[in-house]
Image (cartoon, rainbow, N blue to C red; front, side, top):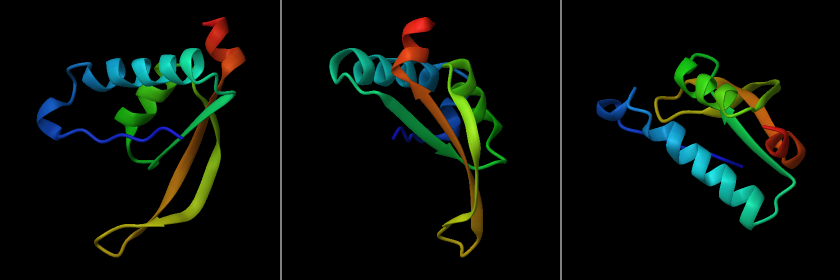
Amino acid sequence: MLGYALGEKYWGKGIMTEAVRAVIRYGFETLKLDLISAYCYPFNTRSKNILLKMGFTYEGTLKLAEKLYDGSVNDNECYSLTSEEYNAI
C-alpha cells in the first residue's frame, strides 16, 4: 500500500509525483510486487490526480472508513496498479 503526505508549502511543484513514480518503480522492479494499492479521501483531488497520472485504477469507495483527529469520519477511495499495468505504461 502506498501512502503519502506533503506540506502545503510544497504542493504543485511535482515533488509528490516524482516520489510516487520512484516508489512504484522500486515496488515493481526491485521488490517484484504484483499490486500496489493506495487510498485517498474523495475531496483530495490532488492525490487522486497523482494516482491517475501514475496509471492507478479506481476500484471503489470504502464508506466511513477512517476517523480523523478531529472526530470526523471520512470515506476512502481505493485505487490499484498491477505489475502488468505498470509494465504496459
